[in-house]
Image 1 (spheres, rainbow, N blue to C red):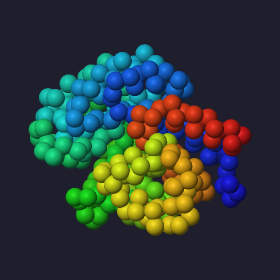
Image 2 (cartoon, one colour):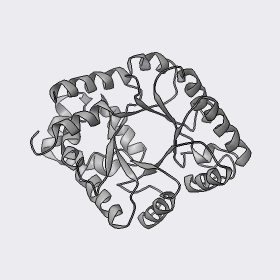
Image 3 (tube, helix red, strand yellow):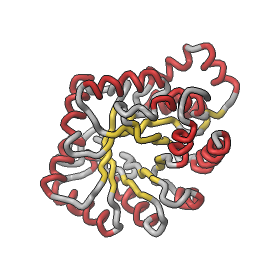
Image 4 (cartoon, rainbow, N blue to C red):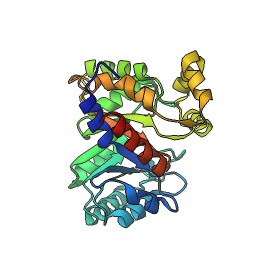
Length: 279
């Protein structure tokens, strides 16, 4: 653990940005989440945008920084968008995350996050932070050139980016270096796989299109050995590989975004252990 600012890493872990999805019982799991924690709430194709908004309302009494995901393909039109923004304003939400969404066919006029962001700007809103998705390993259906171009366009409408989950720290840093050279300056939150059952994590990574780094991990003898030693995955090694870059002003890494897959208790236990380890 030499070669980087331990205090900086400890602060990054303390201020981790946690993602959950709307599901029965998740409210109770979040009871032990620290005050002022950043909490991303996903917008799933199966549950729809209303489930996200309902969870925001239920959690609005807590002292969390709530960041609902507003998936573009689940918003029908400008009128629906105005209604969503009004509901969030009623709950005093100041931050949102805008992915394209995984619906095969859009629910209405918005096919992409960029389209939604542009209409949001036309409508006007009181949001202070808007996050967008980024893909260090590419996208299953979009070529890299288009991804870079669209991210460049989003830069004028967003505050920060979150990278898709990736198991390869070197690839993340190489990609981040590349987009900085291209003039993309959005602060980057690095997406990390959370603490969870290893087979489920690898299956999920392949399903959501980050299979290359999952395959990379399995090909490395040292890493593969670690995979076989325990049934549960912890992102410690990946975290320490990324840690030396936290102080790089050019890369402009804001912190870590943890995909918890609703394993909140395990995630918070891991967080406490890491903070003690770095004390």
